[in-house]
Length: 76
Image (cartoon, rainbow, N blue to C red; front, side, top):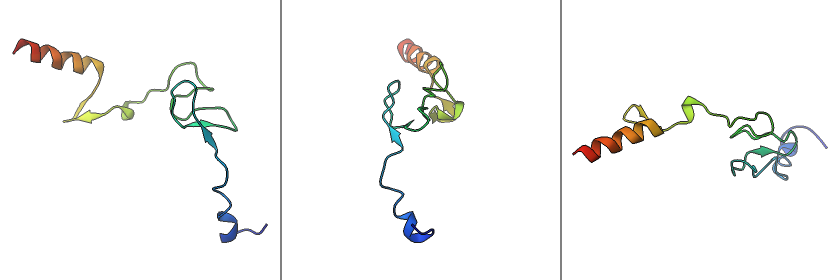
């Protein structure tokens, strides 16, 4: 096999990721057995980052904020 452009077409034949048992996303690497989404296979805790949360009106959508919003609506 030669290097260069003809060899690049052979890259998409197999899959390198499979469905993760813990989070269900298509992010579990076959070779290493680690999930890039939740960290399964490398850590016991589910991987969480601040940048993965959704921001709406410059406020992070978390359970605490959702509970506060519900309480405000119930008061009115």
